Image (cartoon, rainbow, N blue to C red; front, side):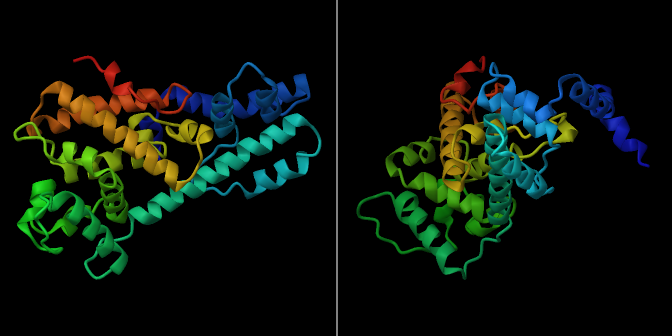
Length: 294
């Protein structure tokens, strides 16, 4: 047995994990209802809170399939409205699992210069953000110093996607669809800019890390599960959430009158507020960055 794992876990979490099975058994004997039934029957809980409690009840993880829970929920669905609601929540958890795996698959897709679909994304970014002047009609150049103009670290943008892969590229293209707004992010004058392209890739990584627990940071729940339990649990909503977080980051950054050397420091503050929003048992809301004190 690895005692290092126990040493790194909060004792309250370890104790609750050991005691929980006995507590569930005693409550079933007293009430005649399973933990899931008791959660659903508590009408004072909002739907997002029920999802969070059921997440804990079924020991929800991304890697463990919910096939057995879904089969049981479908079987029990005909029994009562309570079981029908249990199925609705379990189904949401299943959709969340699939979304996280889809996002991870895109993230792990390497960005290369020979993929036609990826080149189409680069072409759109180039025409919308790099060649900004009306009389600038230069064709796409995959190796060009002009990429640094929009915040890539060098003349070859491919090297900056190693961490977030195709997901990072898709998010930059998604932002560029609103060209006018996106150019306000790109054209912040030095030294107050945050290197747009690299900033976007960092923001994508922040969101990806909130899809799953992180015991090393004492996060033992799925921070974004509440958001996706209320809104559609699909890739379109992931991109909409990314857009919201990007807008909040930009407003926060501008309000700080910061320079690029403060990026790491301010990103920690912003990410802490983003995590705090995830703990409110509600979707991420526009304007949350205004809660950060200067």
